[in-house]
Length: 260
Image (spheres, rainbow, N blue to C red):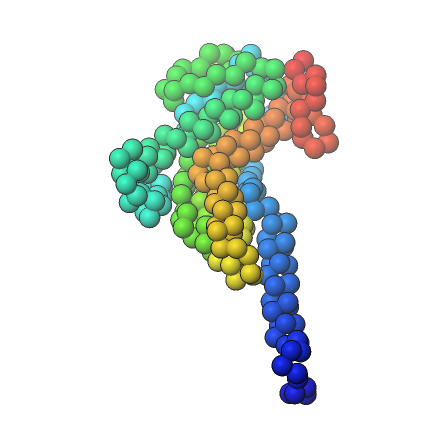
């Protein structure tokens, strides 16, 4: 109703509207960051597990085999692949992405399983196992780089990378290869705030892009391969604890005297 105001008086309506917009933007950013902008959740879907009546012998070694990857299951970030430095290094080609993700996954899985106290070794896919060895095999069913530009500018899950695996775990006995555990994993992308949202909320554009880019470094294929390996190890350790090979707490974490 107040249409008249002094020339020096505050533009109350405009100020309140801008304040409300900034508050809404801040709330949006706060909510998105609360969802974990720098992380990702790895979903694990159990498919099968050992159901024998007698306990299995504790393995003397764990073998982590190279996971299979079909080039048709790899999606590259085409925008990044066209950048000069990637054209020179060739690191955005499907086979290079596959090799990098596989290497990161295997290294992290070996590191995580070593905490059980059982010797762990990374081996090629055609390595024959000896008796009383736990064999971890499987495949990457999907490896997607997503779109880095969309992650930086839009956020909210847009352009997210993704890593999916199928894991088969067997124990080699003198007479047979017994299924120990089988499960699938997939990435649930964290929803970071893109620079476009930050700018709209009134943040400094350069600062908004910087924050988004920092978040993106932890939302790429290798980062998700590492997190997938950690989730894989946790699922295997859960089955190992059920056999009495290791001890875990109520959170599924190995206790100090995990190795018996």
